[in-house]
Length: 123
Image 1 (cartoon, rainbow, N blue to C red):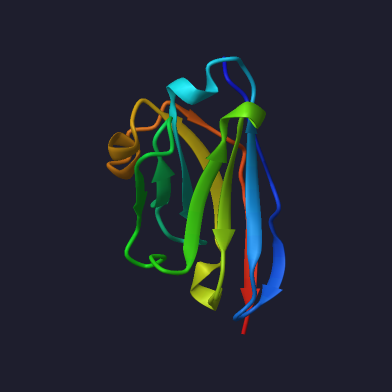
Image 2 (cartoon, one colour; image 1 turned 90 degrees about the horizontal axis):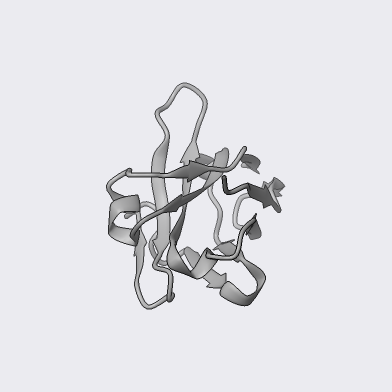
């Protein structure tokens, strides 16, 4: 069973940046799409971004387009989420996710989850 371990969360002021990382166990990392979801207090978990196994396709939620960038380094079994121009409404627990396709991840079809990392954006 794959293990997904997120890191990079923290407290940042509005307008600032953070980069999240997610390291995956196993030797078939490039066979899977990877993505990020987030859940704010009192809200449902929502899709943020996804990238295909080869990194040829990416998808973003409308709320983060132009501010967040998802990328991956298959040689390191790691996926990243670069978050710029952060807003207080980006405050949430961010979860790494693995799926069979980036489009499926955008639809909420997730095979494995990480444990989450807290991102707090102060105004």
